[in-house]
Amino acid sequence: MAVKILSDSACDLPDEIIEEFNIDILPILVSKGEKEYLDKVTLDPKKMYDDMRKGEVYKTAQIPPYMFDEKFEEIARKNESVIYVCFSSGLSGTYNTSLVVRDSMKSKYPNLDIDIVDSRSASVGFGLLVYKAARMAKEGKSKEEILKMLDFYVTHIEHIFTVDDLEYLFRGGRVTRAQAFVGGLLSIKPILDIPEDGTLRPVEKVRGRNRVLSRMLEIMEERAGGADLGNQTIGINHGDDLEGALKLKKMIEERYGCRDFVVNIVGCAIGAHSGPGTLSVFFLNEKPGQEF
Image (cartoon, rainbow, N blue to C red; front, side):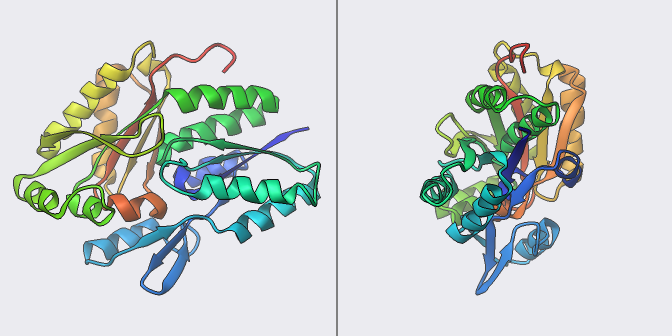
């Protein structure tokens, strides 16, 4: 039986990849005041970033149980074999909710065939897992083969990113008001990552935009380990700063010889917390085996 890949909008994959590989996407909820939106369905990221620059505040909520209930029942009725690759459990309750709904639904549909994978990743770092799984599914790989690949990628995917304004991290409780204020005065740009537990972690602080991009490339080399950066797919995304993303892409091309990239805007689910001007790079720190 062919394997279907399901994910959620925090994977931030470009529409053309989602369409080409027939990936099913569940939207994360985003709100502004009393009004609620569906990420990338009823709220466009560009609109959200424009609003944020004007001082508007957006918040997010995990995918509610009823959405999983509807989707999982559809899967059961179609008798599909599905892998749901979801947003990091360290950053959202979505993973745990999906497990509860799936296990509850098995009493009604005992043959429900859904494997749920905690990506322990975010944005295009998470998206690279979904992309690779969808490619393998299209090639006719078995569920077991895809799950084995996902286990490798979850363990070896690296996230390196920076934000342009510490104010947004302050709103999310990641820095103090004093840190955000001083950082703004001194043009301090934090570099952050997502470790293996899938949470958010500050790595270091760098002064100035140009220096932070150079330092991100240095960290890539430090963490590449046994990986061959030039022969893997590199993920890059941006908080409505395509110029910055393309500059980062060119720097990576020139330094490491990389040619295969997935570049996209950060969607509303992540961007509501990271803000405009965010730049991220995602890569593997180990070379996968031939079976992948």
